[in-house]
Image (cartoon, rainbow, N blue to C red; front, top):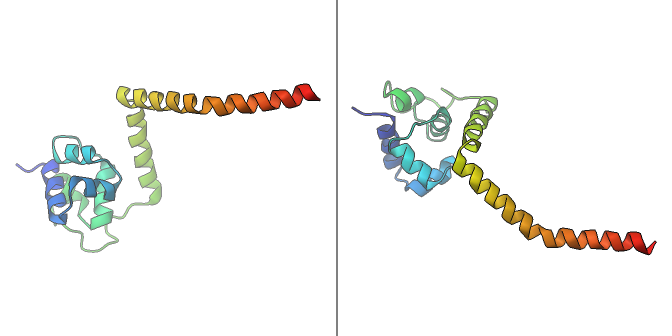
Length: 133
């Protein structure tokens, strides 16, 4: 039986895009596309973006029911507000992932380390101004 991942795979193949190209088009990594084509849960945000970008019917993507393509571009269009809410929920889930937290902490630590010399230099300059008055 065809599932949502099979239908995502079908869409990518029909569009003739590589995982990287498809990911770039919907704003995700190649690894995420591999997951969407595999066994990962496909969130509503991905369905919305695919539907808006290429005209695929959201019900067909989700459930395999109905026509594959929407009849017109306005059908199934969502508001920017709803899309923003979906993106926010996606990011809220993502930032709770331990690997994501670790990566962000590593980036922040590296950035702080890189900035330290310039901060120290500015502090030194301000301190020298203060004591020379």
